[in-house]
Amino acid sequence: MPRPTNALIVDDEALVRVFVKLLLNQQGIAQTWEAANGQEALAMVRQHTPELVVLDINLPSMSGLEVLGTLRRERRRPPVIMLTAESSIKTVLECVNLGATAYILKHSPKAEAAKALADALDGLAGASDESDEPEA
Image (cartoon, rainbow, N blue to C red; front, top):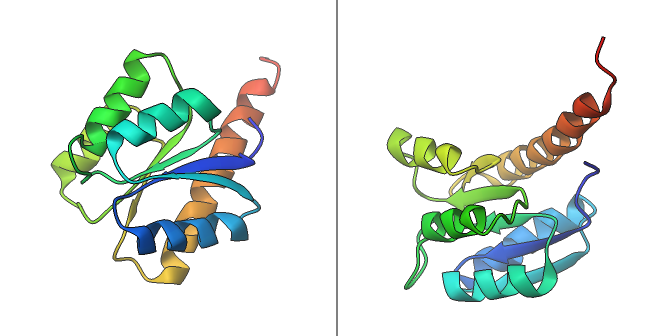
């Protein structure tokens, strides 16, 4: 899979969405959509089919974990990077079990968050490059 060229940012805090958009732009992702809650996120995924979703866990009315689970049940498989203040091992494992690609803590310094995002995007591209190689 090549690096994504577009992404959906899902967070109930407008400033966080602006910050994530900046980080994504720095990684070459110019096209972004935004959602402030889980229902909006699902509608945006269905409408735009983003190549990447950056998803907060704590959202009003429908948690990010519920959104992630719904996407997987609907067989929608965009890579999902969780961006959250939740850092418990239980929460991280739940995200991984539901199919999250990466997990970035909101309270990380900007440089650390940017590196984590770049690493996650590189991992997406690298994973598909490896799977594209012929088997020996």
